[in-house]
Each structure stands twice: as structure tokens, then as C-alpha cells.
Amino acid sequence: GTELSENEMALKAICAPKPKQKMKTINWAKVNPIVLKRKNSMWSKVLQMDDPVHVDYQELEQLFCQKQREQEDKDKQPEKKKEPTEINLLDMKRSMNVNIFLKQFKMPNKDIVELIRQGDADKIGAEKLRGLLKIIPQQDEISQLEVFDGNREKLGNAEKFFDHLRHLPAFASRLEGMLLKCEFTSGCETLRPNIRAIITSCENLLSNSSLRAFLRLALHTGNFINAGGYAGSAVGFKMSSLLKLGETRANKPRMTLLHYLVEEAETDKPEVLAFADELKDCLEKSHRLTPDNLKSEAGQLESRVKKLENQMSKASDDVR
Image (cartoon, rainbow, N blue to C red; front, top):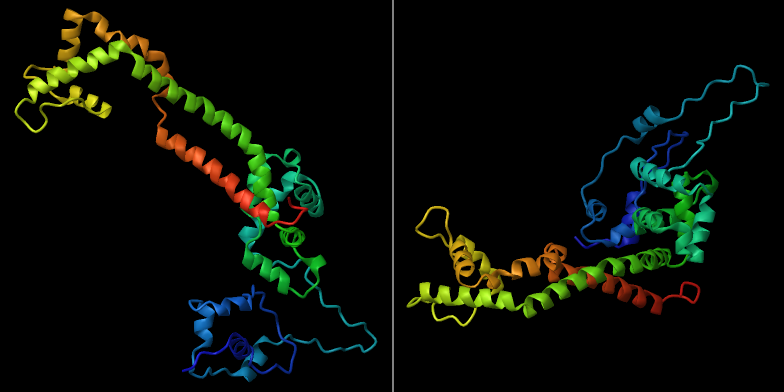
């Protein structure tokens, strides 16, 4: 059949007749009609179904109407219906998590939002900013608050916070910017010494004459062993291949090519092994670091700066 428009589907969903009696309430969280625009939405598929729905509305009315107590004394004031003290739009777990986090501030919701508006990262602190970014409202939650037409004073605390926050332009960008301000210096202070450690180690490795002498010994020995094969006549080898020296076993128990080279150097030129002591200090500082990881950390920091720069180019003067 032809596809229904969003308006037609919405009308189809509420086309049931109105009951004659006052009915009980089903406290469900309504989905925003915007979901009907998504082709893969469960509800858009449900409302596209053509087969008729058979409902005994009369029986439903009898089963779920509110029972009225007969007035025995007409002069007696009617008992007032107890109204709910709090309206919750969020699910219970989400609401609980938001409320637990907000207690850390020990201030009203509007004051928390005002702190965010002021953009003073130091007043909030990096830890709380990270927490705020984890609990900020998603678009569907903002949509729920936008279409809510009840008494906003009766909303739960988490809903009230979201309601205040949604009126602050670019609240997510503000929080991301403040967190970046808090973390940028410390991030650089962590990166810089690690980068320096890697550079220093590389410079020391390249300039160490003892290491060069040992590598030459390893190259000559290896070329002799590999002579005539595909690996022979090498003019050098990758540094990762140094591990192969300890994996190449000799025809002697508990001896490898590395053992052999060390023994040869100790006998002929002990100074060839001096690099082990000379490079020890710088390598201890850098052996757990890798250029790839450092590039990744620096890249993440740079991308956060660029993202914020892009957001600020489109933001209002107040946000900038």
C-alpha cells in the first residue's frame, strides 16, 4: 500500500474512541512523533500495518474505569483526588544516575547551569565537567521536555535540571571547551617529557659508537651464517631483528647467537659492549613508550582543539 505521512500515522495511532467514564492512567513515556520519520522505526512500521484492530472498548471501559464511591451524605465534601507529587519523564535508572551526580554540586539546578553559562572551568573542575558531559540530555530527552505540556514545577529533579540546561545555547560545546581548558595543560605536560624521552633515546642510540660496533659485529656474523641464502649479503637489518639474535639457537645447550656475540666481544674488544651501560638510563625512561601511541595522544588533543575551534566559529558571541 501507499506510505502514510507522519501526520496520518499519528492520527491513526490516536483514532480510538473516547471513553464515557473517567479511566485509570497508564504512566508510560511517550515517544516523540519525530520517530515516525525514521523508516526503520518500530512505530512507523506498526502504524503502516493495514489489518484492522479489534478492541472491545466497552469491556475495556468497564475494566479500567475509575470506581466512584456513592455519596451517602450530599453535604459531605467530595474527597479530593491525590495528585502525583512528581512527574518523571526519564526512566528510573537514568533519573537516579543524574540525581546522584547533581548532589555533588550542593546547589540549585539553575546555579549549576549558571556556572556553565559563565564558562569558569576552575569553579567546576575537570572531574565534575567529565561527569556533566556523561549525563547531559540527549536529543530525544530534550524533545520530550519540549513537547511536555504539564506542570513543570512537578517535574522530577533530573528533568528540571535538563529543562534548565536545554535553554542554555550550545551547552555541550561549553562543557567540552571548559574541560579542554582544564585538561590541555596537564595533557601537554604529560606528553612533552615522554616525547623528549623518545627523542633523547633515539639520539643516544644513533650517536653511540659502542652500539654501532656491536651491530657491525652482528651484521658480519649474520652474513657469514646466511651466506648463499636469500638472507645473505645484507648491508644492514632492522632494529627489530635484534630479537632474532636471541632466538637463533646454537648447537650447544642453552646457547644462542646473542650469547656467542657477547662472548666474542668480551674476548676480543670488551668496549663493544659498553652501550649496555651507556644507554641504560635513557632506555629505562622510554622503553615503555612508542611513537605510535604518542602520535595518537597528541592527535586526540589536536582534534579536540580543532573540533572546539570549528564549534566556536559557528557559535554566538556569548559562547565564544
